Length: 100
Image 1 (tube, rainbow, N blue to C red):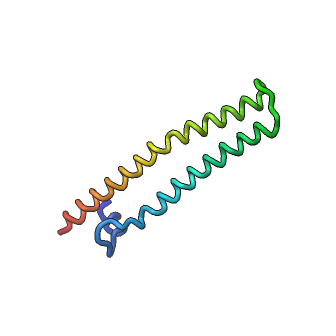
Image 2: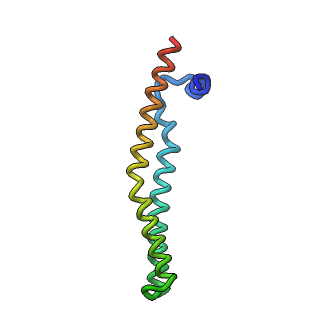
Image 3: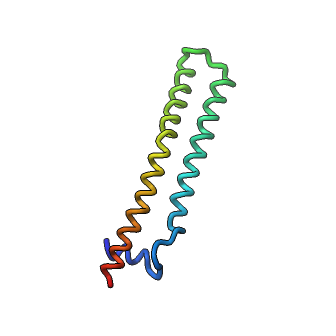
Protein backbone atom coordinates (compact mmCIF):
# COMPACT_ATOMS: atom_id res chain seq x y z
CA UNK A 1 0.00 0.00 0.00
CA UNK A 2 2.82 2.37 0.92
CA UNK A 3 4.54 1.76 -2.42
CA UNK A 4 1.31 2.41 -4.31
CA UNK A 5 0.74 5.69 -2.47
CA UNK A 6 4.31 6.83 -3.01
CA UNK A 7 4.03 5.98 -6.72
CA UNK A 8 0.92 8.16 -7.02
CA UNK A 9 2.47 11.09 -5.18
CA UNK A 10 5.77 11.03 -7.05
CA UNK A 11 7.24 14.51 -7.51
CA UNK A 12 4.39 16.10 -5.56
CA UNK A 13 4.68 18.19 -2.44
CA UNK A 14 1.61 17.80 -0.29
CA UNK A 15 -1.81 17.15 -1.72
CA UNK A 16 -2.57 18.22 -5.23
CA UNK A 17 -6.15 19.39 -5.43
CA UNK A 18 -6.28 18.54 -9.13
CA UNK A 19 -6.53 14.92 -7.94
CA UNK A 20 -9.99 15.77 -6.58
CA UNK A 21 -11.24 17.06 -9.94
CA UNK A 22 -12.65 13.72 -11.21
CA UNK A 23 -14.50 13.24 -7.93
CA UNK A 24 -16.07 16.71 -8.09
CA UNK A 25 -17.01 16.36 -11.77
CA UNK A 26 -18.67 12.99 -11.10
CA UNK A 27 -20.61 14.45 -8.18
CA UNK A 28 -21.88 17.34 -10.31
CA UNK A 29 -22.83 15.05 -13.21
CA UNK A 30 -24.80 12.76 -10.87
CA UNK A 31 -26.66 15.76 -9.45
CA UNK A 32 -27.50 17.08 -12.92
CA UNK A 33 -28.61 13.61 -14.08
CA UNK A 34 -30.97 13.31 -11.11
CA UNK A 35 -32.53 16.72 -11.80
CA UNK A 36 -33.00 15.97 -15.50
CA UNK A 37 -34.36 12.50 -14.74
CA UNK A 38 -36.94 13.75 -12.27
CA UNK A 39 -38.00 16.48 -14.71
CA UNK A 40 -38.35 13.99 -17.58
CA UNK A 41 -40.39 11.53 -15.52
CA UNK A 42 -42.63 14.37 -14.36
CA UNK A 43 -43.17 15.53 -17.94
CA UNK A 44 -43.92 12.00 -19.11
CA UNK A 45 -46.49 11.65 -16.36
CA UNK A 46 -48.08 15.00 -17.27
CA UNK A 47 -47.95 14.77 -21.07
CA UNK A 48 -49.13 11.16 -21.30
CA UNK A 49 -52.20 12.01 -19.24
CA UNK A 50 -52.02 8.97 -16.99
CA UNK A 51 -55.09 8.63 -14.82
CA UNK A 52 -54.57 8.53 -11.09
CA UNK A 53 -54.34 5.01 -9.77
CA UNK A 54 -53.26 3.45 -13.06
CA UNK A 55 -50.19 1.26 -13.07
CA UNK A 56 -48.32 3.72 -15.32
CA UNK A 57 -49.06 6.65 -13.00
CA UNK A 58 -48.02 4.59 -9.98
CA UNK A 59 -44.78 3.55 -11.71
CA UNK A 60 -43.78 7.11 -12.60
CA UNK A 61 -44.64 8.28 -9.10
CA UNK A 62 -42.47 5.54 -7.58
CA UNK A 63 -39.59 6.44 -9.90
CA UNK A 64 -39.87 10.10 -8.89
CA UNK A 65 -39.95 9.15 -5.21
CA UNK A 66 -36.92 6.88 -5.60
CA UNK A 67 -34.90 9.51 -7.42
CA UNK A 68 -35.90 12.08 -4.81
CA UNK A 69 -34.74 9.77 -2.04
CA UNK A 70 -31.39 9.32 -3.78
CA UNK A 71 -31.10 13.08 -4.26
CA UNK A 72 -31.61 13.51 -0.51
CA UNK A 73 -28.53 11.31 0.01
CA UNK A 74 -26.23 13.60 -2.03
CA UNK A 75 -25.17 15.72 0.98
CA UNK A 76 -24.19 12.56 2.86
CA UNK A 77 -22.21 11.38 -0.17
CA UNK A 78 -20.48 14.78 -0.33
CA UNK A 79 -19.52 14.52 3.35
CA UNK A 80 -18.12 11.04 2.74
CA UNK A 81 -16.04 12.37 -0.17
CA UNK A 82 -14.68 15.20 1.98
CA UNK A 83 -13.74 12.73 4.71
CA UNK A 84 -12.03 10.53 2.11
CA UNK A 85 -9.92 13.51 1.03
CA UNK A 86 -9.08 14.36 4.65
CA UNK A 87 -8.06 10.76 5.36
CA UNK A 88 -5.89 10.69 2.23
CA UNK A 89 -4.18 13.91 3.36
CA UNK A 90 -3.49 12.44 6.80
CA UNK A 91 -2.22 9.13 5.38
CA UNK A 92 -0.06 10.99 2.86
CA UNK A 93 1.43 13.11 5.62
CA UNK A 94 2.18 10.06 7.75
CA UNK A 95 3.75 8.15 4.85
CA UNK A 96 5.97 11.09 3.87
CA UNK A 97 6.88 11.69 7.52
CA UNK A 98 7.71 8.00 7.95
CA UNK A 99 9.95 8.09 4.87
CA UNK A 100 12.21 10.78 6.37
